[in-house]
Image (cartoon, rainbow, N blue to C red; front, top):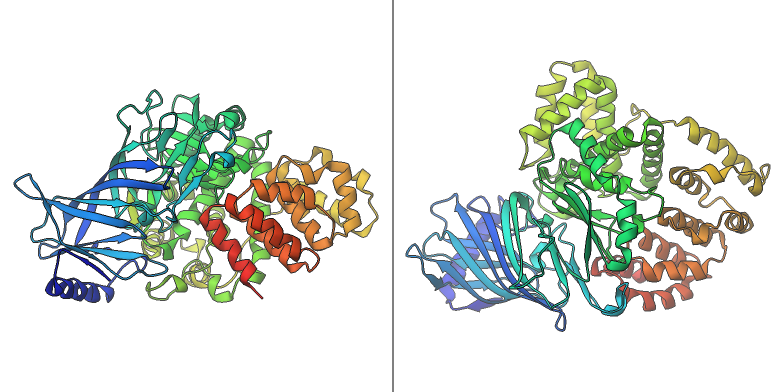
Length: 618
């Protein structure tokens, strides 16, 4: 434990207060006492040092004191080097504050406990991040497209914001923010805030975010970045060599915003801009408001994977506007967003495409159940919210939550359910909610007038039960049904590869086909498929990934294209299953170790951690 400018009495008082709070802590992943005080605004003044891989400067928090007897401020930190803390005295002068840092916790980092002899309106924490900050990836010039300038980006979800800002790192607390960021000349800084396209960063890059956000939506990126407007309220940022492809792929963004608004009310974040990151970005997209971070793996050249953008846009209502209060209730963010995504896709691209998308989503959800313990298959548990260990599977909640909402829509009727869901967003805008809040709203605003839609017992089964309830309706696309017949005949050898009508398939049909031959097709069949359709070199990463996975399991040699893929793509969704499959194939295990030793440096720390775990398994 580190103690600065204080004495044993202060330490005892701070630790006693901490001990008392653990009994009633609402968010087990945060040390913050947000029942006593809440951050209402954050200002950052930071300098980026690419040589040392650090951000340094200060964070200034504006505070709303709820408990007039509180005598300490507790913030979340992880690996931050705290230089000093100051309080704003009522007289207007800044004065030094006593503080202490707890011993580090492997999951939660360290609590920063600041003693307050009075309840200040503002507090400043001067600090420096660690080169190993879990939220930040610092990339060398060689890891970028041009090879000329370095790049850095953040990924704060779920509790990594504390590794680059000392703050109340919980989705229960929302705040506005502003920032001034100093960066090397020639590099652009962008944040999840209002970005001035005309700025050149003279005197520092300046930002403001007028809408209150939770900490996990705090985001920054610095690099060789260009911008291209897509419409009156949307633009795409990307590395210069990728900007043209990105602008083409994302040309329908304005249409998506309008489609979502027609369904669920006005877009409340002013602009919807996107940043296409380097390939090491560990996830598909991150819904940082006003600047969604996007993986370049969605750029297929034919706009076939833009449902990912529809998903991130949908978060502007579900997640960003109405936010899970703790990560136990994650399905309120992602299940709702998956549902809204399908509705936006249907509005833009038609019912047939939306139905295929939904069927593939549901089939992948059902297939995933075999690897998920039953206790983790619920949307939310009945356990007290005391530890992340009690939370449910973070991937299953996406399709299962959407399936629940789809069931309610099918039974209540679209017009009734649309009005209900829009009301949920309107009445809880800029709030953090729990499952109990949704259940209460559902019973009052839908089930009270339409009790036939769902019984209390069935609702409980959806929320707290394992798997997918037997009452759930499974989507059945006629186009995918025809494809199933062709796939079965091909697997049995009664339909030649040359006779597969796959030249006219869209990406969803290929994804469905490859999902269903995984573990069934032989090496020779996959070789024929590759020779006929060039799947190993597909520009669509969703297709290429599924083909590689089947090939590894069947023993078809795809080492050359797979090596290129794993050296250039860091998205966990692709990388972790591919390394897992390689390690499970005795003939590929040694090669996988050699490849990972070369590729690991290109991955984000989050991806590295996930893959490392696979290599440590016996």
